[in-house]
Image 1: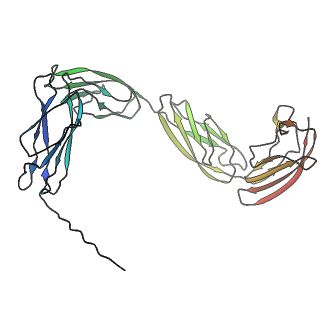
Image 2: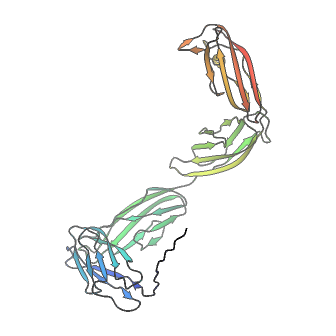
Image 3: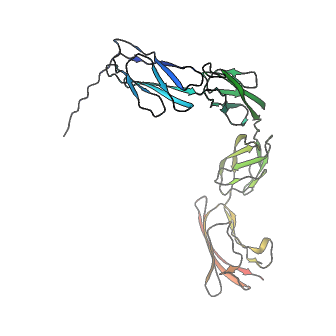
Length: 359
């Protein structure tokens, strides 16, 4: 079974080259703009309904020819996106359009926004929110200038920079405004660095990380095995032999960052042990009994009292028994356990034994 579909594609070279300019009509208090269509046809000529004007204020669109210029009065000062659309389908690029930002206000007022803080090298982005204005002069405080409407500027070095915007509009009553100032502070980036030991690695030995970062006061570590830390100089016990990509991110109080990465080699020999006694009633190292060892990937540990009742169960080395069952500290006695382990190298082991609870 098959079917055939046909589509006719017409390719032409009769583009309409779109363009327009605008000017505010006097007096200086007015909100009336004149829009002049400067579009040109590649071939032929425009008809009496070749274009649509959208004045950006929600008013009805005008469908017109090339001339005469359009005059439009706005209800309120503001910034409007004015669009000219070619709708004449005798031109191959219809319905193409061109959009321009038009600012209208009786008084020109320079104003802009930008973040007050950055990290060197910092590319500042300036958003021009001026009222009215046809021309703009930016002074970035480091000798750099621009005449773009909303420029970007690179601050290569740390420091404090006083930025000024001058807005000019000869159709307004005050002609220009020079009152827009803003201070940008550019902070130095920190330098992240660390070393690790023992290097070469020693089997079943925690890795000690020595932080050599400069210009930072906060840190974020990723040890490459799913574990993290915010300690300045952490120690980390890995659970399997391998090479781990460790990442350190150094932060300043201003939020500037730098990242350093280093591979860490680890040797783990699987070992397993369970203490035979603990003292939960006495605060200290022996108050909680845990499974000890290295290279333990999975585990299932169950502890039973003399009557065979399950009083504790754990699947993690980090979770041990504190002698509590159903909210009560259990009596001094010998408790039996079973421990099923799968090591990170794939080997499995079952261990049984007993633990003495001392009070």
